[in-house]
Structure formats: structure tokens, C-alpha cells
Length: 131
Image (tube, rainbow, N blue to C red; front, side, top):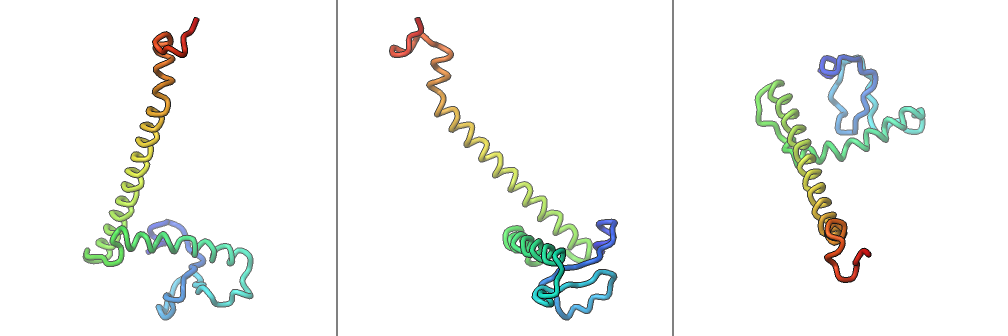
């Protein structure tokens, strides 16, 4: 299914120990974490590190975006569930960014209101008269 989605051939699959026993019959070579780590090449070690960097993101998606259980039917339901969860995560990220930008703008306005006042009306402040 991933070959159809990505339109390219997968050659290697790096999985954790929970994947054992799935009897995968495909073109990709399955590399299980923790096995043969002494014989691993530099590329394999880099890919295993990348896999461990992705695992927390999958865990957050399962807990925060309700990907732990899919209530939609069939493969189409699975695909819809993942797309909607990703859209929700992106929407939350956008809201967080906008909230942060609004906070920065308000802080800037409060901190530099006196400077704006001086630049706009230079002769109205008793201490800072421009001759």
C-alpha cells in the first residue's frame, strides 16, 4: 500500500520489536531494532536513529489526535482517519503560532509605546524636549 501511495519502491523497513511475527512478504528488507546492531553499517545506524526520532511523534499523534483507535470502517476509513488527524495537528500548530505572534505584537506595543509617543509628539514630554 505504501508503494501505491508514495509512487516509489521501498527497499528497507526499520521497525521496532513489536513488529515481529507479522510475516511480511514483500520487496522491502525488514530491519528489526536491536538485532545485529554490531554488524550494522553506518547508513543502517543513521536510519535506526531516524526511526527513534520519529517514534515520539507517532506516540503524540496516537494520544493527542485520537489515532489510538479508528472507528471508521475499512481501509478508506483508516486513510480518512489519518488525514483528519494530520489536518487537526496542523491546525493546532497554526493556532499556536498565531497565538504566539499575537503575544509578541502585544509585548512590542507595550514595551515601545513610550518610544512611539516620543516619535509622534516630540515636544509633549517634559523631560525630552527637542530644541
